[in-house]
Image (tube, rainbow, N blue to C red; front, top):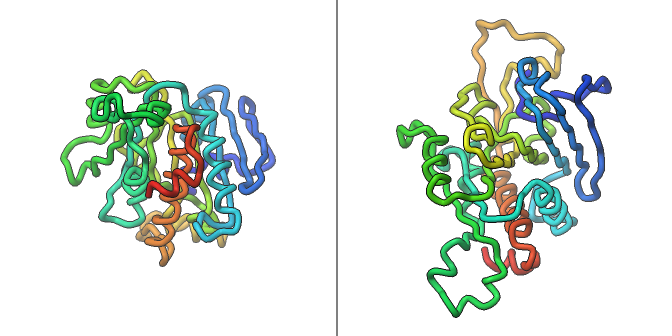
Amino acid sequence: MRTDLAVESFGGDDIPEGVSREKRGKSFEITEIVIHDDSCLESLGKGKGRYITLEGRSLSRFADDYDEMVSEFAAELSRLVPDGEILVVGLGNNDITPDALGPQVVSKVLATRHLRSELGEEIGFLASLRRVSSFAGGVLGQTGIETSEIVRAIADKLHPAAIIAVDALACSDVERLGTTIQLSDTGISPGSGVSNTRSELSQKQFGIPVIAIGVPTVVDMHTIVKSLTGIDTQADVPNMMVTPRDIDRLTERASQLIAFGINLALHPALTLEDVKGLF
């Protein structure tokens, strides 16, 4: 069953040796899975690292506990982000709504790297903000350039302490569409959820931490059939990716929550009200 979520890969009660699982959370049901070695890399596609899944009823900005959800997400992200300058990268195609999460998040991230050189002595309170830059460069089919090549070129120029990469994911449980956020410190392979894997973005490739953030926006039809019936679909039966009919609203609201959380995590001097007022 195809999924990008570690919580679905290790969903049963039997946890393999070398893997630990912890639950916590208030506004979200949070599951942190730590894989201590690479023993699951070949079988499940999950390498050594931390995978934090936040499951809620909805990522809607109209949720009663929306502010608490943003703050809890920001707190979880803060645990993974090192000190220093950060590059935020939005992966995906902004012209295809289920794949537009990354670019939409980046459009709401507070970029501050240029402020000192632009404002000089007038910077005032802004001097307390971390240096952050953001980028969304489209996909290979639009640019002819691998995303990893573009990110590497930017990182080699800016020398950030870490990269935050945001992308849409695939899941195996339709209940998790638009209700779940996954954080990991293992990087990401863009397009892996739809069997269109590009070169990975990871610490192994770039020499700096790559923190991945994703929300499942699609599930493939074969996976839905198997989850409902327990029967494998024959290989010659055409497959397709399925997305909710309100995916435009889902992507908009999820991207806002994630962007607000990133801004809070990277700029602790700001309040949530400050962040809301910026966008």
